[in-house]
Image 1 (tube, rainbow, N blue to C red):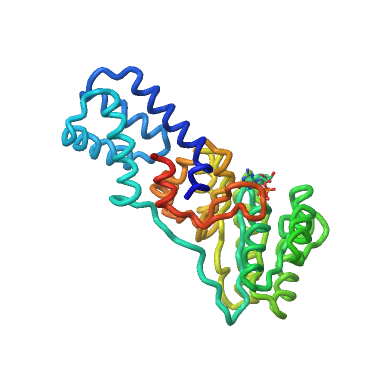
Image 2: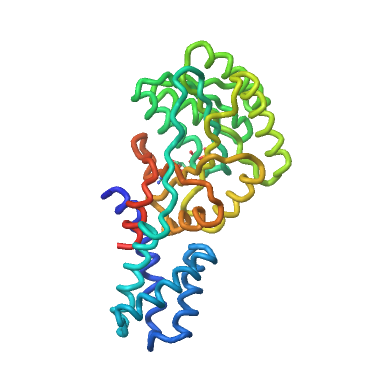
Length: 304
Ligand code: GDP
C-alpha cells in the first residue's frame, strides 16, 4: 500500500491542485458549482458518464452531510470519490491469466516506442523465473534502433535467453524461430513487438501475422496480449489504447511509469471507456518495480 501511495504522489498532488484551484472561487453550493465540478472531473480524466455520475452522487452527499463551507465540501468530494471507486463502482480487478502448466505460454507485448515494453518484459521475465518458470524472450521489435540490444541486455541481466535476428528482419520470422526453441522445453515466451502507430494498417497486419504464427505453432492464441501505456502521457495514452484496441485483441493493460506520473487518473478513464483491465503497473525502472494492479490501493492512494 505504501508503494502505491508513493507511486501516486504526483497524481494525487495534481488532483488536489485542480480541486483547490477549483475551490478557490468557491462561493456556495449551487447549480453552477456542480456544473463546474463536472467540467473539472472530465478534465481529471474520469470519463464523461462517470463525471455525471460522480457529480450526482456529490449533490446528494453534500445535502446529506449539510456541507456548506469550502473545507467541508472539499472533504465530501475526496471522501465520496474514494467510496465510489472502492465500493460503489469499483475499478475492475483482474490479474494476469494463469499459465497453462501443460503447454508453452506466449505473451505478446504491444505499445508505442518508449512506452516501457522492454522494461516490462524484463521485469515480468524475472518474476516468472523466480517462480520457477523457464522463460524465453523474442526480440520481434526489429524496427526501432537499439530495441534488440536493449532486450538482450535485460535478458543477460536476469539470466534469460533472448532470440534475435538482425535489425530489419521480419518480426514474424523472429517469432517463428523463438517458438521453435521455446517449444522444446520452455514454459513461457515473452514477445517484444514494434509499436508503429503511424501506420495502423501495417501494424495490424504485422500483429496479425505474429498471432497467426503463434496460433499455428502452439495451437492456441497467445495467453495474453498486453498493451503497455506510459502513465505520464495522460489522454494521449487513452487515444493510443483505442488505436491498439482496433488493431488487435488486447487482454490487459500495463500502466508503466506510474511513479513519475501526475496523470495516474488515466486508470479511471481506461476503466470507464475501454473496458480493458489494467493488470500490471510499473513503479520504477528496477527489475523489482512491477506490481499487480490493485484497484483498492490505487483508489485509496489517489483520494486520500
Ligand atoms: P519500449 O520502447 O516500449 O520498449 O520502452 P522501454 O522499456 O525502453 O522504456 C522507455 C524508458 O522508460 C526507459 O528509460 C525505461 O527505463 C523507462 N521506464 C519503463 N518503465 C518504467 C517505470 O515503470 N517507471 C519509470 N520511472 N521508468 C520506466
